[in-house]
Length: 279
Ligand SMILES: [Zn+2]
Image 1 (cartoon, helix red, strand yellow):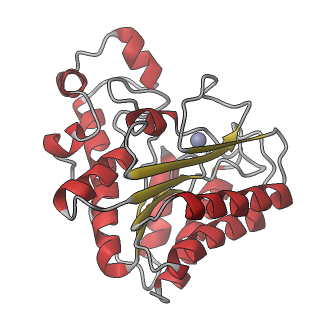
Image 2 (cartoon, protein in one colour; image 1 turned 90 degrees about the vertical axis):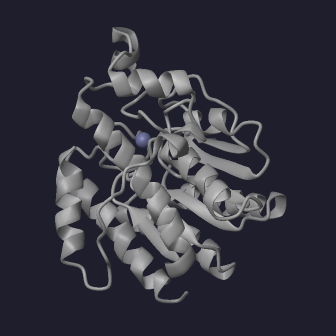
């Protein structure tokens, strides 16, 4: 959890970035992606011990508030991106949350909530691409949006990593353990080309996980910091070339050294600023 405070500290000193308090997602917005019974049980602290254990942290009023704001921040970033080109959530990327259950530190699925909220509150015809480059598969996102042709889910992840039972995204690419920069970037370019051939996106939601980094405790891949820079550039360039609003979230990052994780997230934000200036 500490990475979020440190990242916020660093971003607050950055010129050109405007920091805004995360608004909570409303019940209505959460229900665009979640089951009402699940939402009520989260709000009232009535998940059973197994469900709570699957999420990975204990229930509290603050946990509910944090989960609401983490989703609300992605909604706010997605809306801001329509004015500013690029905007981000300094947390979020809670892609393991399913329609009716949480998992892997994820309570509400911010990407699915934000995508659906854009359609409900901005334009019902919006087509949205979710590009999930966290090292873990976006299983919750894939499951929630499986039968939704208006939202394209792309997940590039470690094949042998959690979740061990994968769901079907619109495009899934599983990478082998030890995958290096060159292989990763080739695969990513290929994935973006496929996305382009199969889907006409009006905007992008990007999960910029720091956990593909070689210094990550959970990642199992071997991307350098420079490799992750090129990854981010590839996604931002994809959006910029098509003038697509892009909102991104931090998603995972569990460095052996906390500072290296914060550094990678911060690098993504600095890169975003360079691209944002070109919109
Ligand atoms: Zn992850």
